[in-house]
Length: 304
Ligand code: GRG
Image (cartoon, rainbow, N blue to C red; front, side):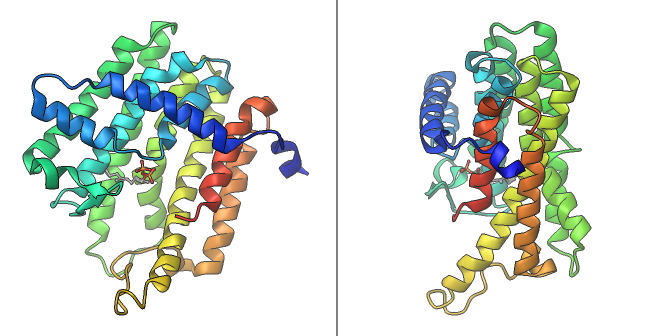
């Protein structure tokens, strides 16, 4: 019964995403104009405008709208969280971390601009993110802006995304990683970015403490769900590709949910996380909650 209550049939998620992503991409383009010094702005734009799924900006805007705010109130913040998400990907791809050559279907930043400029493009995007929220947010009382900025910073720092990344790097040398530790990593490395994003959007939109907390919890479950589904897809993909890659196990050196609890239990866990996430939205206006309900469905059932 809850499922039916939570799912209005009239909501078209594909159209919603297409329309919002279009507005977000235009705002991102305008937020980082190509100007002197050219090389750094080129590098910032290269990664930022490479066409990600824009999940963070969508959540930021949807959280703001859900508590009674408007899209323009959240747009600079939505751009800012995409800047931070992008800078974390640039740094994650560096030779000193994951050493990846491709991201969003294109050569990684350090492959194109060199390591030094890639590091600096990440740094500049991080600084710009906070500048952009602080100077471009309009129609929101400044106390809310300050609170939102503080919350976002808390979720991405050493107790959040950065801490998760350090734990992940440390775990790679370990022979045994427990389920608790795997969850510790993902709650920080992946879920914290989404939590900070939802809290920021809800605070800017004028949400009550209770509403902010519900959206934070929604984002936490959804972020963890993203990672569990990612791990499941890794297993499915690697067995599909076995022939092509001459039997190479694509996830050989990585601890994943399927490795620790098996594929069936991982699927059950994903379903439970999706339901727990959507449950957080049950007290809100049904139509306004529809985008976030649909987003959790999308993340749970995506195929790549
Ligand atoms: C945030 C200050 C700060 C530093 C970064 C390098 C680092 C510290 C953290 C790594 C974080 C990381 C790479 C987490 C994984 C996040 C994740 C789920 C990426 C995939 O996101 P998608 O699929 O990507 O939404 P697109 O390309 O669609 O945006």
